[in-house]
Amino acid sequence: MRHPYSIWRACLGRLTPDVKTFRLLRKISPLKGLFMSPFSGLPGFEHSRAVLTRGVFLLGLALIAEEGFLSYLGNNLDILWMVPVTTAAFIALHGAVVFALSAVIDRTGIAAAAFLGILFAGAAVAQRVAEASFPGARYFALLAVDHHPRIIRDYFFGDTVEYAPEQAGFEVWVSVVVIVALLALAAWFVRFRYRRLA
Image 1 (cartoon, rainbow, N blue to C red):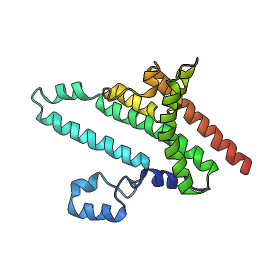
Image 2 (cartoon, one colour):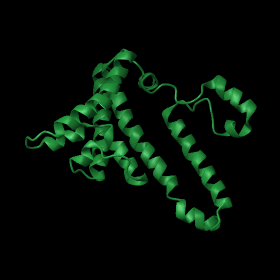
Image 3 (cartoon, helix red, strand yellow):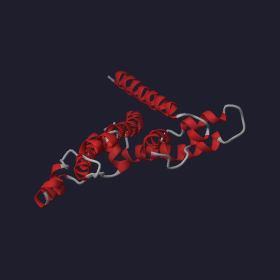
Image 4 (cartoon, rainbow, N blue to C red):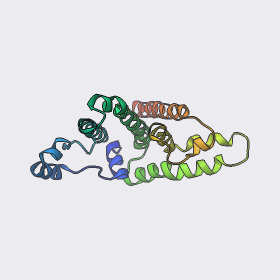
């Protein structure tokens, strides 16, 4: 069985510099080295680095804000919890799909194709079926799994486009329920699969 992290890498590519680049950047700029580590390629580290960077940036903007340091922080502090919540939604959904696929597919290339197929082709098919006229067709929009974290992101940061579940009339709390259900189902499936093999 392939490790889920290798599938994650194959699907999303290298998100951050490798160890050699990290060492080079640390020599060139101490500030860049502060926000990079050899572990930054792991999904959790990438997003925690983004939160740390935004926090430092927010403090810098507060120092030069015309309305004053505390007023600026009070008006903009919500960004510090919105970014991690949105990130957690993406990690939970993509992680659930990756771990479930890695439990049944041994080859990284096939697992990566299945992952991308579920996220992109599956979303397009679900959206097309949800537009059909038969009773209950709108529930197929919930199978556009990649749209759910995007709906949560848009809820916090403003709408960009209307996704399939939104077009079908579902609220943001339905997307949260779908993500939690997929995460629980994937955890159960992976546990069941490896318990049977052990």
